[in-house]
Image 1: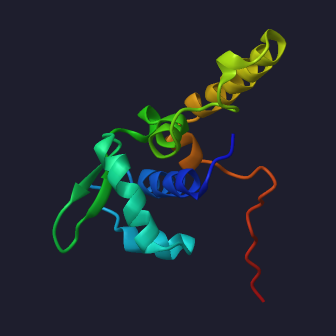
Image 2: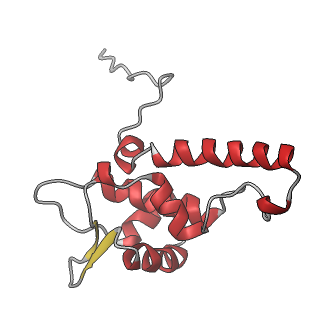
Length: 141
């Protein structure tokens, strides 16, 4: 299974929206998401429609419009986003046609990937801190 730029950029959109989620949240424009992540705004526009149709994001019209999450970030999994943009999660096509020993392998791989995606929320991704990342120190002379 290979996750394309659709899935990867879709997660980027959702993570950005999750970082801005909360009381008094203002909508986030695709232009700002594109700029912050050095991505094509036009491409993000193509990805936001299926996310909106799936009920994961809401659009806000107007001069200060943009997008907000339709649910709390902890209620949306990365699996929800990947399925909307990439389709069903499966390492190979035609699992049922495989011989039993290989079918079991593909099913175990599929289930492991599903488990990770379905147990990783957008909130988890938005709050991620790299363990190797250290706070920078400010030195005054």
